[in-house]
Length: 447
Ligand SMILES: C[S@@+](CC[C@H](N)C(=O)[O-])C[C@H]1O[C@@H](n2cnc3c(N)ncnc32)[C@H](O)[C@@H]1O
Image 1 (cartoon, rainbow, N blue to C red):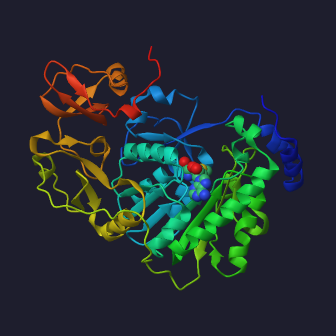
Image 2: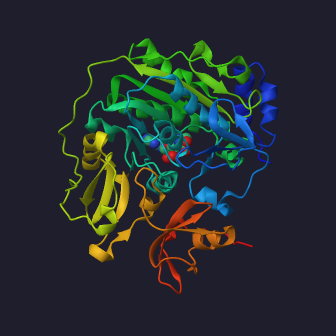
Image 3: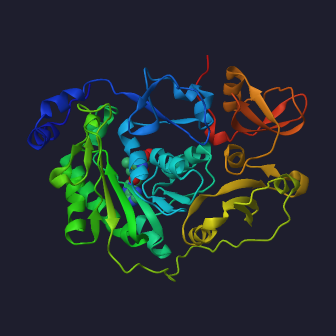
């Protein structure tokens, strides 16, 4: 086992009274937990223990091989560390408008974005952003699986958002950090830790917070979180914001039996693994008191404007009767986007680098229209195609990208497992062409 860094151990001994208990908990096995998707309800894991602060959260007795479970690929649940699920409890506590515009600024791989989308339950809009492109692609994959249509995925820097004006009612800033809270779950993170890196994180977090601040509307909320115990990256990071009157601290209260620990000066909350069945996690909620708000910037972005074109809707799309979504055509693809937040959606499409915008329905003229995988997975814009339910073994073969034989109607079909959609296929009669995206295919050997 990789040793805990000595300087970390020394600091923890100075920082917290029950340091020995914390340090020895880091050599225990990590709890395994998942969060169910309320948009794709299923009774799987019904008998497992519940997580007190997150109604959809479950502790599992042992770690399954998630890759080999078709329900995981269908977006029925997301494996997530239980401390991170406090985002759910916070969202239930604060008051947001009816159709809130939310941002998850450092979102990949997407765990907390799926909490936000579950909470929004189709209302408002979530912009899930990730600065590193490859990670942003993983984020997109996970959010496509989750199935919510009221979502945009962007690949931008925090400062880019200021072009939108003070548009966000809620910003989640799950900051890149020194990762001490992951020392148990991910041993490698012990080797990557250094004091210099932690100092570097402090500077970077500060810049991100400063850069995103103008994008929060006055009266809006910022949930700041990290997975580290280092108070310089946590309470010390936001103290100034409060002292300077830029924000006020949102007072949260939790039942004593949950065993959360307050940060110094009661600034925020810690999940400590020796006191709770979680990894290390810190969170604090700020309410922006500063005004005036920032207006839309007319600054040239260098990004080519996305021009919407008029096109007749192919037969397959005409079938969608959905008053809450409107259909748009950009660069040879049809998209469905929630109408109440369309203006914001178009603004984001113009100014930022979007990797996902509402629900991509597909493209191609007339009979040659090819439905997009994203449409198949979406719950808010249901795709009305015949469903072919597969057994587990065949479902895994489909997820590996194999051509399979099915007994069903010819043409486009939705392939499912236990009634949960996995993707599209085109049944030719003697075999079905597999339209499961190449980049998402299972590469693992299946016995
Ligand atoms: C703690 S992880 C996010 C985990 C994610 N919120 C979740 O729940 O799955 C922090 C993310 O911030 C991204 N990041 C790093 N530097 C950044 C920057 N300067 N601005 C915005 N995001 C950054 C990292 O690439 C990383 O994906």
